[in-house]
Amino acid sequence: MKNDVTDKSIMRRYLDDMYTQEEARGLLSRLKDDIHAPMLDELATEVWKEAAMEELSTGMEREKYKEEARRLLKRIEHKKRTWFRRIALTVASASAVVLLIFGGINLLGYMDKRQISYLEASTSYGESRQIRLPDGTQLILNSCSRVRYPNSFVEDERQIELEGEAYFQVQRNEKQPFIVRTARFDVRVLGTCFDVKAYSSDEVVSVDVESGKVQVDLPEAMMRLQAKEQVSINTLSGEYSKRREERDVAVWRKGGLRFSSTPVRDVAKELERMYNCRITFAEGQEFNNLISGEHENKSLEAVLQSMEYTSGIRYRKEGNHIFLFK
Image 1 (tube, rainbow, N blue to C red):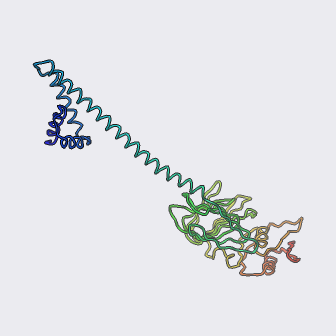
Image 2 (image 1 turned 120 degrees about the vertical axis):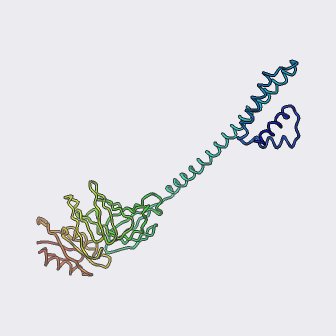
Image 3 (image 1 turned 135 degrees about the vertical axis):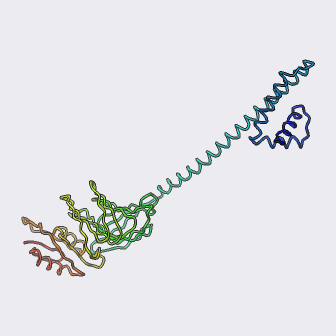
């Protein structure tokens, strides 16, 4: 309060051109602060009233006070306009900085997306391949399979595309789900181990969970699987079967084969992929057999003999060509 009275006194002398340079510098420095605005308004009102109400002996004095009031009001308005411009410039500058920051972030995000390239890995007949994805996820491709993935996961989801079969050990990240997209369905996980079999040429596709949980998204349905659960989906009929079994997942990683009520034509395709052979069926005969059984590191001949014994389907082998008949 005392400083306000002093400032008003100095301002009075300032209007009359009666001040020291030190007083003027100190006053102008303090007036930059908005808290002095009420004092300026009060001083202007006082000077105006004095000019209007005080009885003056001469017209010259009256004009002097009016001129003082006009000068003060002019200075106040100028000060307010200056403050307003400074505030506006500050806001504009801050807005520009904010826009620059957000624009830079968006630009960096856009550039990151533009700089993303996609990699592909594939396997041939009788071949498997181990791949490490950018997030640390490990996968093993089965024979005649292909995976497509980005060189960096910058989106909210880690998405890859799979044709064929692969076993996954997904690096856990709850903020960035891992999604395997296939032609038949999508598999969504946070971090787990599972096998996806989704050859577009097969009648039956499947998801087999080793640990953790997965979500399988179909065009018109969704299901969740836990450890030791498997779902098989018949792509022709749309039927699916979900079961729980205490057994190893993806036995093909060790050269094994497992069939569980598998259509014989799908069995033939799997044998072709694994043993790099060509299998044909006799014309005019129906082959609607479902094959079950497990084989560990068996030769093609041993597998064909086992199938003949359990299903009655006979075979004839000529070089790399297998002919099946009844």
